[in-house]
Length: 218
Image (cartoon, rainbow, N blue to C red; front, side, top):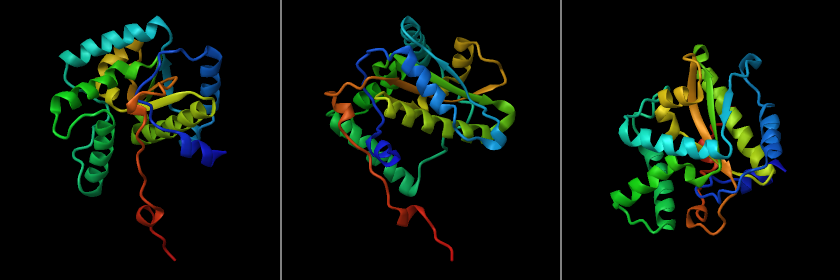
């Protein structure tokens, strides 16, 4: 069952807009709450939108992003180098190719990037935050929570995509959702029903083998 979920799950980048039943969202959250954490601190807090609340947030976020610099709580990568640069570019080019965006077309690629802040048309967004005092380990625990959320959603036929992009608007998200100054934004998850015919959902990323990722010590 787990192997099937891992094989079938993908990051959805185009949604139909059809809302997910509230009871289904509650079930996803119940399953995600089983995530393990450091000393069982369970540092995650999640703000979720439904209905017109999603549309208001989508509009407000777009306006904010177009007029404000990025201010993430956790620094974004300083650079992508070596194999990480290669893998990142491979992923980007696979997405752009599926959408007919030519290599070097910065205008079209920038327009696609902005779709992050349109939530890819999703009817729901979940904003995940941690307690500032827990530092990086609180963020790691939230990463585990995100994975559980994604697999729980997949098991219930709900498409999702984790988004680091929205974390670049951390102060705005805190104000918008009324979060305390002691909360740190980790990421968001857009979710709903996948648009099956949209080309952005047609490509697949690759994974390196365990021979690359694992060091055996005897």
